[in-house]
Image (tube, rainbow, N blue to C red):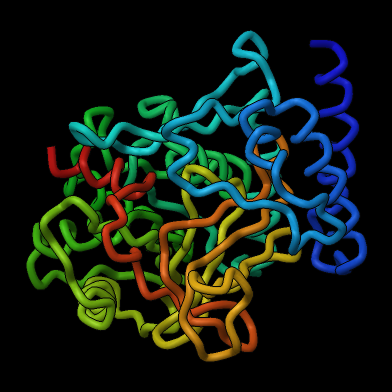
Length: 349
């Protein structure tokens, strides 16, 4: 136990130092290979997965586990006694759920905060959370993400408008918006797509006062809900609520099985991630990377996934772009999943 802990902390220190905008390709490659070797040494299921495959000499050659493997195997470098946090995907009868284990959330939190700073969203001076807080949903990575962001970047101007049971309190939301406007604080509104849809339906045609610099961050999230609203329509509704243009609305792409996030702004733009995470669009027939403009399965390499597996093949289809990827949605026959869905299930309940 002491050996794995010491090795983890040594690599964690190096990766924490790499969470910066000027991270170079050679440093990313070296860290990814070092983390991969560490994971093969201590993560037995992953070592078995890698055994028949050639030794990786470059980060692109690191074997990526299917996202579904987090449901069927305990993909962790640490034994249960060393784990302090476990995030779970949502699950339905017969589907099960995935688990992502953490020795502690320090690296997860640092990567998320550095990603927010990489976005350069410093205009907002207050935050309203349209999800549960982490204390009410300790197994939700989305709740951890938003609660940590609120605590570390917004100080006293933090308003949670979803109660412990997952219900949106519209009156609390109205009061929070009024307080932010009176205090001359541009606000960041954070929630799932379904949360904003519920809000628009509950307040009717109401439009809230807000200051320049106000923004919305939505995380997607309709799967398993029986609802599906085109992004253009969702952004029209959100814009009507707060008198915002699509450029003021961001979408976050992430998942319980990862520790870093990708972002896009407005409509028709690709998702991009900070320098410590890579996305590759894979041709499912050849296993190689697609050409720019072609569609494939999204594969992600995340340095912040030190305690589990840094290379994950998602169940999402995407188009490769010159920079980043255009997300198309779930691959055919893929089961609904995700922290956004889990939050949405609480809202519906």
